Image (spheres, rainbow, N blue to C red):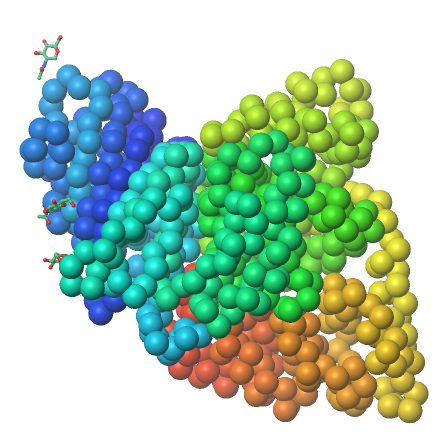
Length: 612
Ligand SMILES: *[C@@H]1O[C@H](CO)[C@@H](O)[C@H](O)[C@H]1NC(C)=O
Ligand SMILES: *[C@@H]1O[C@H](CO)[C@@H](O)[C@H](O)[C@H]1NC(C)=O
Ligand SMILES: *[C@@H]1O[C@H](CO)[C@@H](O)[C@H](O)[C@H]1NC(C)=O
Ligand SMILES: *[C@@H]1O[C@H](CO)[C@@H](O)[C@H](O)[C@H]1NC(C)=O
Ligand SMILES: [Zn+2]
């Protein structure tokens, strides 16, 4: 089995940083939109960790390697690339020169392939402005290897610099500090970048398009296509308040700048915490800041994930559980404890839905998972986020509350900053820090970390906001569906916050299917057809599909053709697949439109539609 060759440190990488380690990355690339490729070179500084090491192992996926040289000796080096295996790409083995040096600089000339799984190439008509092409990256979990030869494991962190040449009417952005741009001949422009904080390969990021920026804080700009720049600047105007609150909880912000980039609608995630430049879906621009918890989330990753990183993706909960837990602390500080706990309960409702979908015995519902031979993208779910945050809320309660736990958090970030760690390291740090507190002996680590299903304990949350929702849900479910008997009015519903409306719909969606008559009456009374908020739209469509309301199939297909965010399109496609009347139409629609989605979404949707 080829996967036996994977690193004992990381089942998702071929690299062996315990033998020879990449310590710095220098990229020099040209972008070619016609060929849909980057072309150029990367310089890798290498250090032998084992003095006897004779080779360095890199991860590559669909890359065309031109040659490899010892940069200072100007000597060509032999290398070998294995056959690709599953979604992992290939193992690239470079023979190190036979001398007594312990460090080297390799120069690798290469180009990417048009099907690079970490890049999405958009034609001008797929952008808002419709005049210029666009390319963006999404390298988490294991797609950096489709952009550059690297040790594509979060256990390896390096600084990087880059120079990227693009057509002069476009802007290049990366997950780094912008370091000037120079106009070249032939209508080209070179952009320079430097990332001085060590980052794992999955946090290298790039986007190129017709982008404009607007300053939204002392250390922040928002970048977007011109048509949505003002809306984005409004939606994210609380960025500095979020950053300051996060620093108050976690410690100093080390990345100098915090910018946001609004991607085209096909971006597969809500946000991606690329350092210095969070990538964010346009679906969070709701017009009323109702969905900007994504902002608190991505800002928090500046500590959990980007500063202290999971050693491999089996411990992904260290990145995401901590982030959700702290994101809600930020919401608590800015909006109040009720909002913080309401968010946690909405998260629990979504976790329940996820556990039901995966199956309560699914190994992917454990906090620590086994990824041997498994693509981390297949294991991706809400579990590390919500079960992880629940565990941390529980630990906080056990040690005596935030006054006790938050100093520990700062100590944890300060101790492991710039490093990659696993759950044992966290656990030992926790046990040592709180060693004089007898309460910690109550914690059943084995069950929390290794048992599948819902969390063993759900902490007591403030119920005020959720109870108000439950009142509505109860009335709704008990209603016979006749318009004249409707137990609520539009005015009454509109008193709820957007997040409460979303929670109400989540609860209705998770109960038994409603009658079409009731849904038709509801849509009229509450004017759901006018709602633009994608969280509301997505849930409403799913409620209608579960009820087998035929006219809604068309709306659902239009919805999945408009957005590439997996959180929306995967469940909607699953609903369409589950119902015989819409199954074939869903498959035909997907086959026709799949170029719109990024590889990670295509792979997921193929599973949802049973196309493999
Ligand atoms: C890479 O760029 C060089 C210089 O522009 C060009 O000669 C070469 O053909 C390109 N290679 C690929 C694979 O695109
Ligand atoms: C490496 O060092 C050893 C011991 O110092 C020496 O015998 C050997 O000749 C050196 N080899 C090379 C290639 O320089
Ligand atoms: C390899 O890359 C270097 C640095 O970018 C460049 O100077 C050199 O011409 C390239 N060699 C080939 C064969 O493309
Ligand atoms: C991607 O393109 C390369 C050639 O550049 C090819 O070898 C590989 O099979 C392609 N991969 C997929 C998944 O289509
Ligand atoms: Zn996250």
